[in-house]
Image (cartoon, rainbow, N blue to C red):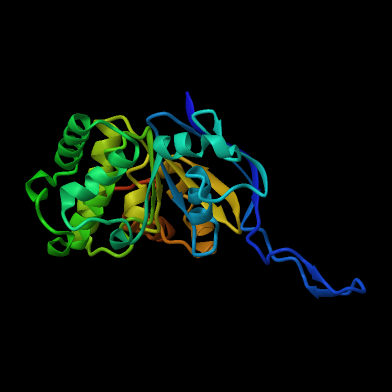
Length: 289
């Protein structure tokens, strides 16, 4: 069952349209649309990674799933709720939680457990249930021991896990994460990615991850690549990343292991082009005659 269904989505930011003078002269030509005919379905429980260079439209797409932006034309449905229907916005944001790049912009309370309780409180959840949700959410992201701490005492990765817990406490079916590890060091990135994978595999929560780290996208069920506001590639991580020249032509990197395979093949070694992990690489090299 599809939890998110996007059909022919077209979006222009204010000022992207053509500007003309009173006598019909063009003062400013029409700028390319931020999203240009995007269609995408995401199944319940799926983990989808969205890639693209800056300006490709991936963050704009993410904001449409949470109804932070509305289509210029086309349709975005979350659990059959149309994002253009103002009466459905509350249901949409309960169904699809959003985690942003900078956790400091999402942490609103002086104590961590109070921050995680903020969303359920605004939903009108009874206090005993809020207590259960806060305890469960903090335990799920591995932050239960920090419930009475201040966010200022945490590392970047820990802050981002608390931000995820705040969304999790609202019991969403889907979590959209817009470059959640961009501001973190490698240790913090691993903490957050492990949490995302656990939520997807153990809790069955649908994940939409906007990222520019290829090693994160490798973990997804499906990879979507965007360029100039459109989806230009889509498929399994193995199938997408094997197309090294096409990705590099768009200014994107590929996982290091896949890139090594690409260059080894160019040097004449018969090695699969779609390897994604060091273990796969070692196994392939050991089988060479």
